[in-house]
Image (cartoon, rainbow, N blue to C red; front, top):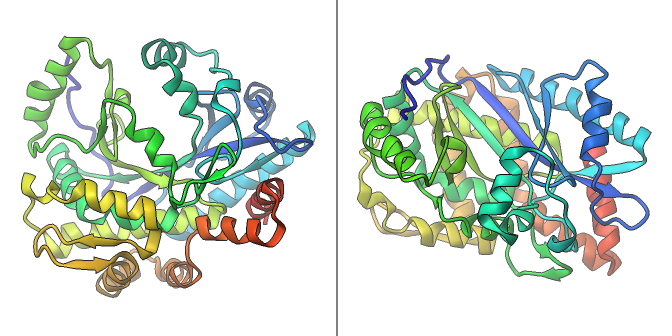
Length: 371
């Protein structure tokens, strides 16, 4: 089996997917309510789409293909409003955040869908432990070769998105000391990490994907849990390292930052990519997960250390003209604000410090999602 032709899509268009937590408003634990919520939303016009996820305590929403920040932000807010309205009818809460602060993985129910049931059979407890919540961002590419080049050129900037989006400091009632503990659950899967270093789509399809399929290890691209992966059926690359932010506005800003960064890479910088660029990849990713914006990464070309927040600010300065060309200047003003305020992980920690109550932290996340 081969993937076939990579679908051509309009360069730099965006799509956002958000995995969201469903909350019992009496206990503030997760609620196995996704079947009821999806049924209710299916009876009304819903902007974008809503689908089940691995366990019944989570859903995934997705936007349509969007060209710019204003349209993306508008639809994400429309989706948010519909979700809040439906959840109010079911008397459940809904929020972002990369992990639920105290849920127990053993209490989760695998959603009744063959793909998820098969994942449970294959991966055991990891499937239920995968009740974590991320943001995925798709960027349109005009060819498979460009998608693979862009995928590898972005490895240098993966820590930016981990640190900016980090919102998972708590796991099973404890502060993990990580800003993004969610990604530790992702890294446990055997097909996680980064894609193999291949720059030609035909070669990737014929020599890598087809051989992997022949081994019985994978059935589709969905079986790869890579940090960035190609999606040939959409004509996109998909960034998968972000925790779900606490607000849809921040989700829109993160997507637009990626859009402008891709525009800069392809239209101006055109960096040389090689397998050697991954030498410090795992170290840099760990720094972003553990320390967030205060982490220190190593430039894979110069081997010079730099703080993540300083690296982001330097990159913002470089790509602001590209953001302006893409009509994203308002988003970049918010992006600078988010760096000053620090990430959602530190916000959640501040809520716990103020209240000494993990339930209060969850209630605050619900309120922040509703805005």
